Length: 340
Ligand SMILES: NC(=O)c1ccc[n+]([C@@H]2O[C@H](COP(=O)([O-])OP(=O)(O)OC[C@H]3O[C@@H](n4cnc5c(N)ncnc54)[C@H](O)[C@@H]3O)[C@@H](O)[C@H]2O)c1
Image 1: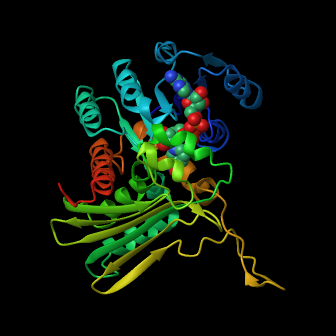
Image 2: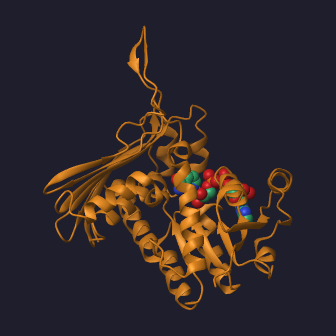
Image 3: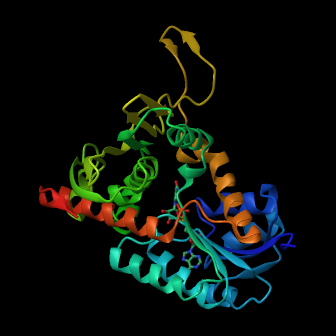
């Protein structure tokens, strides 16, 4: 008999961590959110007062020493992910971590190796789009031969413009546009094309609205192409400056057809006809678009751990996504294609 619930400690209660906390405390079956950790007192107080979480830590290592936790969820800044995964495994905890694994390939590979020391423990880096119903449907259709042999993916991650420019502050620690945003599309392209090995990449970009990104080596709009050794291809577009909303979509083209996921980013099924024409409102952010997928991702992790089933994603996949994203950034900065 498997355990009825997974006893979880969550580290990171920021923009996304709060959403995880709500999901784990309220809606995800077989999850028991027993502890939270954040260096910010107000964040911990929020989890206590709003969700009734009983155990609180300001220090991550102290939470890891809690013997009544089976697993940790990491929704902490990206720069901490790899080390915190390794520390969780050393402490005997299963670990789920938000993307990306690390901004640096050598660090990713170190964590991949470290995890091999603990075959009894499970570690996964979440790429939420794998758990979106439409992407899963597309994957199933591809596997059933619905579009013949897939050979081309176009995928974009395009955020609605935040007129406060808050992302500029975050830019120096984000790894840049390709590592922060295109890493999702890279992971999707590999998954949907059957994980071919990458051969060569080339990327360009511009600071179309935020020139202050240039001195720190970043951009607000970028485009890239990626060749795989089996002849398949991918194109990526990433943006932080869309006027209309969060516009994330993917096309998969095969020898016998094409699948498009999320092409119209409309928020709902309402069509407004008025003096401005006929239109729909757009999804405002990644969270509204992928709200259900974030829950499904938690369910996937918890079921896999409790029922000893495989994850859809491996740590090696996460390392490969970082490897390709770093190459895109280097290509954009050098102006040259990069052979991998
Ligand atoms: N999958 C997606 O679409 C998606 C979207 C947004 C963010 N993310 C990822 O989620 C992660 C968090 O992003 P965010 O926007 O919520 O960031 P955030 O800055 O809003 O939150 C970070 C949280 O970590 C806490 N923290 C900092 N140091 C800590 C430590 N040592 N121990 C424990 N907690 C610590 C902070 O107090 C804060 O609560 C990032 O890695 C980001 O890439 C993924």
